[in-house]
Image (cartoon, rainbow, N blue to C red; front, side, top):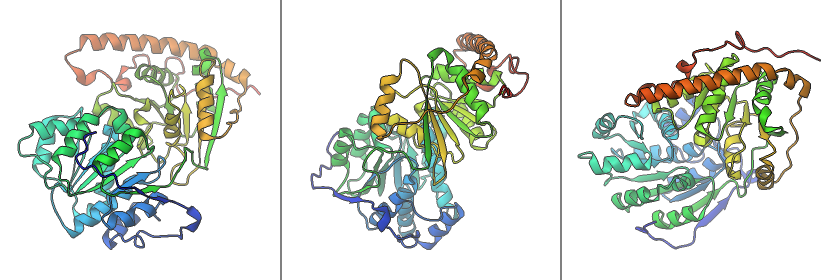
Length: 455
């Protein structure tokens, strides 16, 4: 990381002690009245721990390093101070927020616009997978806040005439550990070189890696460290279970759990794009309202899937780790780790999709004969032994025949879909429409599958 602003002074640290914190309001933290009203309208009754730590310091003009678990209210912790400052000194191209994924960029933009709706805040989302020309036009209008992934932002800084960030007052790097893990180091270096040194910088990260420490030295001046979680942990209201099952029966056990816990909304995590697509087809053939979200889908399809799930038009979202961090989907009741995560820390982020904002939730992890070591690492990381999720094995086995038939249909459809993609290489718009790819939908179930009562 190019140390364009190398500051080796020691970082102050603030560790949150929840017991010491009185019940505080956003007004107590120093947030202006108009933004306090916006928080009320969004249903933010009181600030979260990271907001209580970070907002007063940010309003004092300090650089911040925020370390907080997923779902902790990090966006509010940087958005409110920025909007507060924007009210005091209105200016175009006032703040830049860098994020690792497109979905997170859109979500941050939504929160900025919701918080700043009464003061006319304008945002531009600059990410890959979307037409560059429309983004150039949005930048030409000089929005107040730019939310961007590093690669596409560099593209505009180098190629969009008249666009620069020389007057920027605030830089936010959200999910900084993940930005660096995705090898955006070179792009971040370039961005740091073309923005003013005289600015405020907020760096938010779930973990403090060596790369993040290096970035901190390069980008921040005398930062204060706000840490609300000193070790890896999952929230208290999350019930965590595991299921030890033979690899060949994973699909059957998934169908059993979806039936057992029917009426809930589910996020099911798979390790690959292909398995996400396959499992979505399998479930839809059995009559479940399942929808995929993965990196091989076009941006419009990804947002479409996310919005259908958020609007409760679909009850099951099958996703790769593209959806494990940052996305705020309030109503996820159950997270299923269909494929166990290779990196133990990803487990924390995946299960953090449920039991958010004080609600309860369940997480069930499938452990096959090949996953024992990975599972032991997860238990070691979170510091607890997980209980087994109770199942009726004879009821599971009764589903085998119907699931096998659905698997066969799903394989056929994937094959047809692959051939269709080959034929339409030049036309990428229709390549990943799982909703429309199902030519033999519901042939197995003839409607939603009902749990058999064999007791």
